[in-house]
Length: 349
Ligand SMILES: [Zn+2]
Image (spheres, protein in one colour):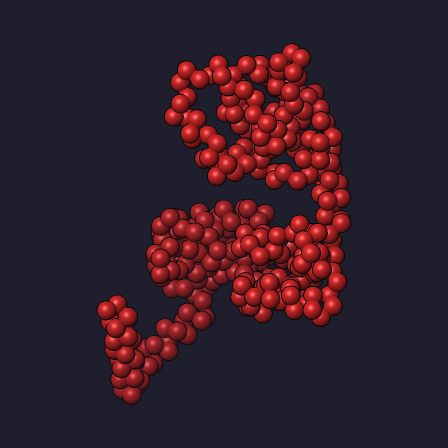
C-alpha cells in the first residue's frame, strides 16, 4: 500500500496535493450527492477514488482512522496525524487538509521533492528518446508557424523516414498522448518555461544588471484588453537582446490597472523595478500622462527611469500626418475604407 502510494506521488499532478484534482470529476461525483445530502451522513463511507485523488491518504482500518502519510512523515501534529474518524467521512475534510498550512509545509519538504523528482525521472527515463523527438517536432512547428493540426502528419512522415525514436507513438507502447489539443498546450508550456528561464537568467546575469521594457495595450475583437511586455538588455557578449516577455489580461484599460499588471508581472519574474532603466510606450495619456500615467507611476518608484515615446508609434503618427497632406493618398485611403465598409456590409447581410 505504502509503495503504491509512493509511486502515485510521481504521477499525480502537484495541484492535487493542494486541492481539487479535477473540477469535472468533482461535478460528476459530488453534485448528485449534494441533492440527497441531508440524512445521508451516516451512510457515507470512504471512497476508493479518494486514495487516487489524495495520494497522501492512508486508512487505519483497525482503529477506523484516516491519516495523512506526508504529515506523519514530517512529524507534524494535526487532525490527520492523530487520525480522523472514518465514520461518515467527508471529501471536504480532505480538501481542507490538503490546503492546510501543515500539509503544504510537509509537501514542500526537500526530501519529498527528491522523491517526486526520482519517481518522475524513472517514469520518463523509459520514454526519453520519444519525448525528446516529439518535443523537437513541436518546437520546430512553433518556430516555423506550422498549424497544430499538422502534428500527426509530421509524426507519421518521420516514422516513415525511419525515425525509430517515434515508433512507440505509433504502436502505443509509450502511452504518450500527443494528438489532443491539451497535450500540445502542455508541450508549448514546457518549451515556453525553458526559454523564459533562459531569458530571465540572461537578464539577471548581464554585466550591467539593468534592462528596458516596452509596453503596449491592445483590445482584441472579443473586447478583451491586454498589455504586452517586451524586454531588452545588453547580454554578456555585449550584444543587445530583445524578447517578448508576456501578455497580461486587463480588467480595465486604466493607467492604474496597466501599472499593477506590469508591476506584478515583473515581480513574478523576479525582475527588480529598480533595475528598469527605460520604458517605451505609445503616446496615449494612459501611458504617458504627466500626473498619473503608467510611466509616471513607474517613475515614482524608480526616479532614474527614462520614459520613451516608442519610435515605431511616432513613425506611424508622422506617416499618417504626412499622408494627409498628399491628395492622392487621401483619396486612396478613402476609397480603401469605403471598399472595406462594402465588404463588411455584404458579410453581415
Ligand atoms: Zn497532510
